[in-house]
Length: 131
Image 1 (tube, rainbow, N blue to C red):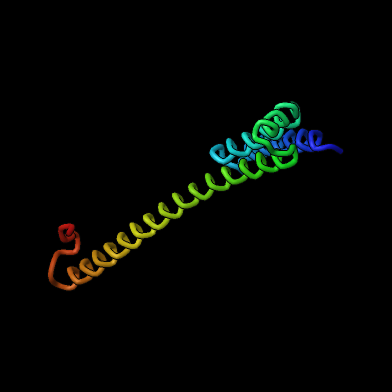
Image 2 (cartoon, rainbow, N blue to C red):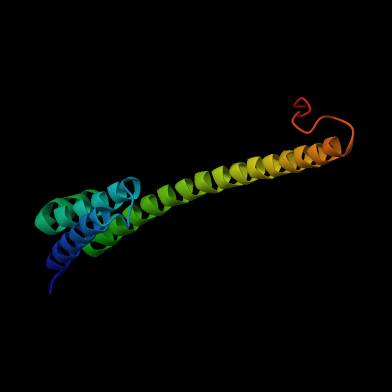
């Protein structure tokens, strides 16, 4: 099996798997675009190997080196995009946890004041003003 056929089969399989995972809701559309792009590059390299050979000749690289460079470059870009998305989600989770903690603290304060109010100070149905 030569490299062109392997890229063609790999790209077609990756394309089909990506569409399957998007349809079954196991992969979000945002991440699917990167995988579809990678599958498309592999398919194009498999369908038009002469284009990759011309790019390899123009950059003074051998064909296997150029194919490896394209594959690693696509993998790097996609991994970087996923890292950025994970960083954003982490920051959002931290912010949401902080908001929940503040709300729980405020709720405990209000429940404590309500219990104190029922005991004698403030009427049970009234709450103090927000700080």
